[in-house]
Image 1 (cartoon, helix red, strand yellow):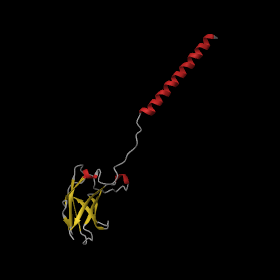
Image 2: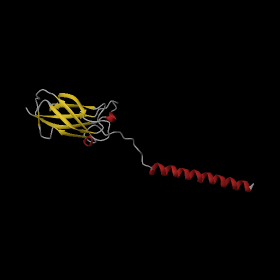
Image 3: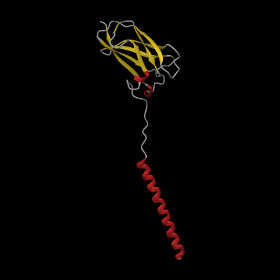
Length: 155
């Protein structure tokens, strides 16, 4: 009987040691492993878009008149060769909307030149904003992006 009792204690001790090791491993992994939080595309604004869009015309400080030709390069902003563009006055009133059209193969990962012509009535404010929106056919906010530049009108 004594032989059986000793093995019973050894077995129970082994199970307790095994459970303690498992417990310590689980606790260690809970506190040693960083929690990974999923992230999405940057919020709309000029964060990542400043690297994806370059405007070569109009130049900074140029006084704008109608019709306005907007030219530059964009990377990854096109869908079917275009993306939306709009011109607003200082009060946020939309003066013109249009499409920036790719001037070469838009399916490349390299920057692609674009051109847009916006016709607008004489604005009532001296300042405004030119807004370029990444074309997002999915409609998912994670893929939205926007690039805005301040502009001055010739009154």
